[in-house]
Image 1 (tube, rainbow, N blue to C red):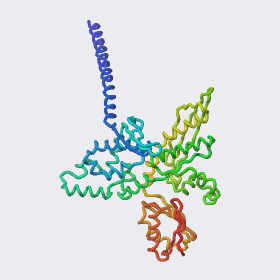
Image 2: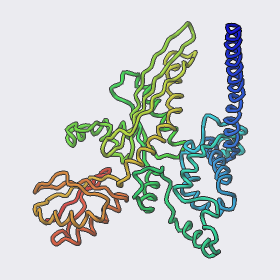
Image 3: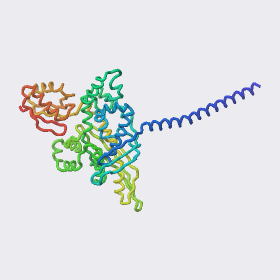
Image 4: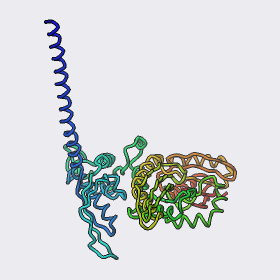
Length: 448
């Protein structure tokens, strides 16, 4: 009997384990659809309708994306708060030239695309549904202290307090759009506004890697496609013909000035006042099967800050296999063009994000002062200038010239004015004059 009882006990345990296992399996099966349903519900909540108009398809599409973002903002802070703070929102969010940073572009559903004008004078209408990146939008709202009316005005504040809040917004005394980064914890609102404007108006220069063995025609088309993206989205870009002309006509000046201490592409970017330059590197392959031709392209786009040549990032994309009946080169060209265009939104976003951190101390300028015979005078000049800029470092100093690296929250014209003001404070430097501006480099003469 004891043996039989033991067998029953073991059998009972096996049945219990089996029952628990089945229950867990059923629970897992039940939770999986619930998880998927939750994900789908979140996507549905973050998907918005948008419409826009413009003189080109790209302009109308971007306007529609930002209209969807605006609808998301209304859901986040309320329609009345959105209307009250519309001016600030326009400055820090709605006027962006890169709406893809606030939406999931791959979710876009085109509802309408129509030209109400003529071929020569287009008036495009574009309507879409798209998922908005709520976290990215909320980060902008938080960084600029934009929220529902209760948060903006403060609980229990009087109407005059609300009016004062509106005046502050209208005066622009609101922190500009920046990622919430530790580097900005000590930045003033004025400095943040400057960097936000600076990044929004950066000039981009795109060129190909001259050491590449890929067909020049293919490489130039890659550059043209990147520039087409920049132009369509209202970014400032250097014309490729300017690069070609400078590279061809002034190589001897490049060698004399730099001794090839910096790369030709960086030097050209400096000469053309580009803030960021992008080097496209291609690897291509093709094959033909009778009259059918196929191409593949690997695209690497390296992003550099111009004044120092610092690498800001790199984006790598591999094309799908493309087809052409015209020839193998056309198949490769299709692969390159489509891949470059798809990579450009990521390239621009990465450049902007990295430049935000790079500019945490201000814009980096090179200052050269010639005829610096009096070391005491230059020491006093440094002492007077240092508190007026973000940072100042002496690179070299001789009787012939002194070189500084200056970090400053302002344009180069503003820095030039500041240098004149500072020189007026130093006995003997009142006649200092400007010799040359090139890129982010200023050259002065003490006038001694």
